[in-house]
Length: 575
Image (cartoon, rainbow, N blue to C red; front, side, top):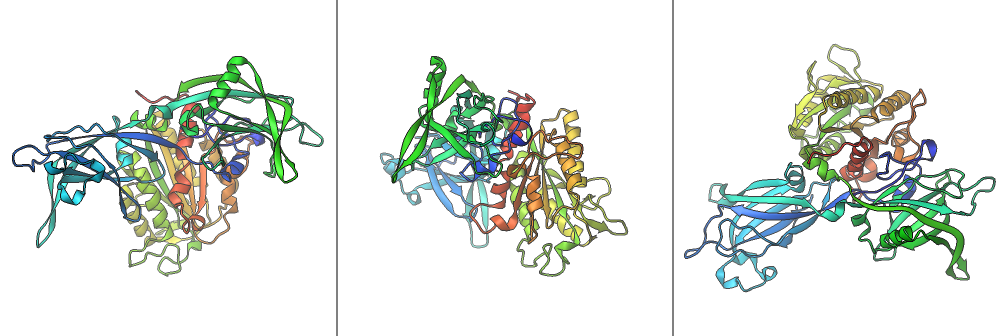
């Protein structure tokens, strides 16, 4: 489940998934992202049953069929699935199951509608049935996240039937629908592979090559999509890389074609292709069992065409084994939670909140400002993973009434309690704070990061099954850059990820430094290097006009960061 990588220390490290050590590897991540790396996903199989359905037939019991719809963010609804018809049953268990791809970074709203199929249509294929000719037995809805976060992945919903009268519309309870989610087994099957090369050609003028491997799957269009990479090994023509964990579902199947490319690392991002091979996982397993090497080839232009030049360099498979790795959903089923925290920038550069040109302006029409949008979009995803839905919320860069400038104050105005209830509670505390503090400065992150780290550290001491996610929303460049780096390096050992949203028109290049996806690992003032990348940064203006939402841009890599932490510390989910 997810991407894979191996690890090397310092500047030559690279990023992208899970290795034997559990660390991440940063140097070639931007290069891979530009070629289409995507976030974690899982195939989920949903099964359904119902109890106490309404009997709509006169001489027999109802003949129920379940229809499922997907509700999109814009409110549009699309039918995606129908079960079979169960004859004469008010407590049906449907055999047909629905398979859906689970995306952590999105709220996937499912609508369920149970129909009583009239006896005259029972010899008609279900996909040909006209729903307007069937009687409604009730409907329900939920987010897919609500199902997968249940310890047993079992969610029971009340079926309701909307009844319209002249004066009002009300709902009548019409039985219950139970939905059970099961993660498809293949999504847990992982191949552990140790790869090596002999006699690599030199691409550097005065030294040996600095090789790393990129493993890509071939999609239908013939384009290669990266799914895995190794660390970079410096000055080595006979490299042996650390094991990589390659999810079999992610590449399709064991006989799906893979392209393994060997590159020479260059710090400018323009990596030289040394050579490549095309093999399936099954082929790699055979190379391992036969202890044989495979010659790399290099596409070489001959006239207007390309020919594959066979090289003396060889690829070897030193180890090949298949294991079942615990997935993100396994940890959720085992009782792990994601706890949401938020910190909001109240510095004066946001502008006077009472004026329409302020980033903090509360529009009487109800239109959300950038801060409200970020809170809502991130919060609506993460709230399903937090059972009590009570969230720590802070502000920074403002002067509370009759007090000095504070770089971490409780958003609700309390002197000793930072918790608010629900996303609505965060919104209300934010609005209230705008009228109870004076915007000031400068922009300092260190205080709120240390506060979040303290909560994560205390949870670790109590052996709680929690992982924390801090959302920082800011309009400006951080002033305490080195102090922030120190705080992040220290926090990298804790069950904590930090999401930063930049709003407004500031130059956020320094923010991108904090996001190790785009550079080398963060280093503290004492020379200590972060144990893993825990920061994701996105500029609100870069994504709000495009197809990808702020939420998807920020959250896509969060499950990978969670798994990296758990696996690096050999923390296993409770069965």
